[in-house]
Image (cartoon, rainbow, N blue to C red; front, side, top):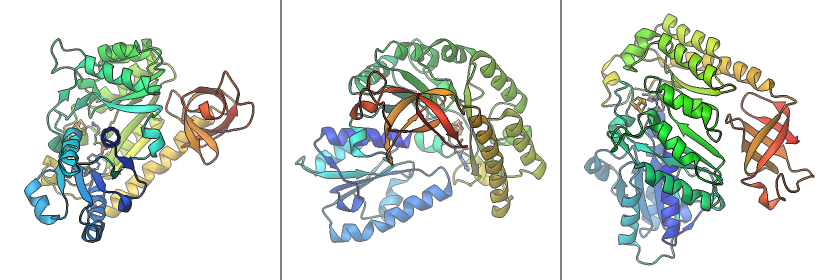
Length: 426
Ligand code: SAM
Ligand code: SF4
């Protein structure tokens, strides 16, 4: 979501005539887009913010704006960081653009936005774009600060989303990822209550758009209609991000996740049955308050049994203001790390084995960019693939070197590791 917000901020600033700089220190406007989901993320933001203080002293005319989930108690932030010119709530790109217009009268300025993981040539017309469809979250997961900072759910009107995707495709996008903290809740607050399946169907009609993704799904809200839409709409990719967080019922209950392990298992079985070849990603938190060794092992065994393609694992981090922060944080840090590493090791093995099955097979890759002399892209199942730029790179596959971006390439896999694959044009 933050990457999407940064992308939108960068596009807005470009429209105002700003140019992008690689280094923040060279820019007339520095935007820090912040994440505070865990203490480590917050520490990183605070460190970066402090490191900008001498710059502001040297160049007081350079503007510093802080956006994102750090921005909660603005008066306290102003007191702690008096050299910051503006604080904007998460996703408040409009507010950012209004602020810079009020302070910079000419449009010959440069900017730097954090969390842009791509360079300027890409955000002007990226092949793969993020499109927020629902802001905020109405769930009550007890560990989560995001819902406190991003507010209640607000769905964007379906026609506005279709219009935006259509515009992005006209500018060269070939893949969109529809975003929300809980995309399965999309539409309940809109007139007529369209749902994610309706939105996927509407976006599917856009010509020259080849791939549609969405994230993140919530196990308690992923209805059969959504699974059926993925199964029946050819442009919707067979990849689902469905965080389980824990493999133990008592822990899930303390997290207030709203499902049991058994219900989750049945959901996965249904997804796999209806969407052949689907790849699944999940999130897990280890060391949640009161998590015993046995409860942790239930999570470990669930991952062993389910064999996800991707697992994002995090050590529990108490966040001020959340319900869980009032529970004793009783799993020692070293123990959290041990559990995290155990899961990482297991997943490395599983992902390696899953990807080995692609060796010698031909996969369809949407080419996103050049990376260290190789083309880089993803399969429909979101697997990262690098392939050599060797001849024949001619039409109709890639349409020549420069035209490689945004094309679909058939790539024969020659090497497969847990995190990526290598191949050559088939
Ligand atoms: N909405 C999604 C969901 O329901 O899981 C994800 C939202 S959250 C921003 C992204 C991930 O960060 C979560 O899936 C969780 O694993 C992790 N996370 C959130 N709060 C955390 C905390 N207090 N400590 C550790 N990890 C946390
Ligand atoms: Fe946070 Fe839970 Fe909402 Fe995800 S579903 S954003 S974890 S409250």
